[in-house]
Image (cartoon, rainbow, N blue to C red):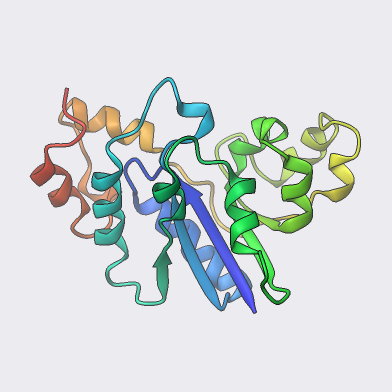
Length: 202
């Protein structure tokens, strides 16, 4: 059984997230694809995201046509900073051996060594890495050289064969605040739901 975990704030979800999910499915053809919204990412504590109920509603709206995708709310129910290792321990406890993948944006490699118990995470999953601007497969060799001793040997990662994702949730929030949103940046129905909930306004 092959499982994929796609975690993040999804603040808000946008078409780049769906493009990554589609590339993942094409590459590894998972048995299960799980979206795992965070209560709050540890590195975003100083800039908390929109209310989790709103982010969940947007995610549900975006995934409505994707019948085989599942939203796991265990990090939301746990509250507090969402640590990947705690989530993986729960999902992999007392289960038959699975082939588990974790989706990661290429730019996240820059700070991944700071993640809690990252060595254990690296033994538990293979990362599927989405290229971002200035962070593509050509960056991996130099990045590996910066890892603490021992981490490079256990890191397992595969780059998704896709164009670099040119969107970020932060940029989209800025556009929304300035009323310069681009409808094409959003999955169907998400922009309407954002407006209905009056999110990301100045």
